[in-house]
Length: 71
Image 1: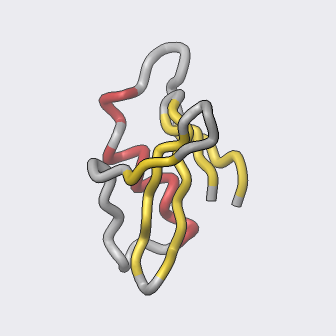
Image 2 (image 1 turned 90 degrees about the horizontal axis):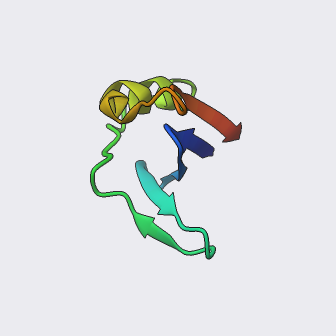
């Protein structure tokens, strides 16, 4: 799943029974987003809302929401 998290590109994958979250760089590189931990009991349908609740302080007038770019 690819998300725009208040202006930052984030990739979220469910692998080996856990959620893995990565920040995507402009050069195509990605790094583990250690500051975003998603509990295993969060379903894929609720990931966007969970991250929005967790990271809401990053919102700005130009980037007011978490948007799903790709499922």
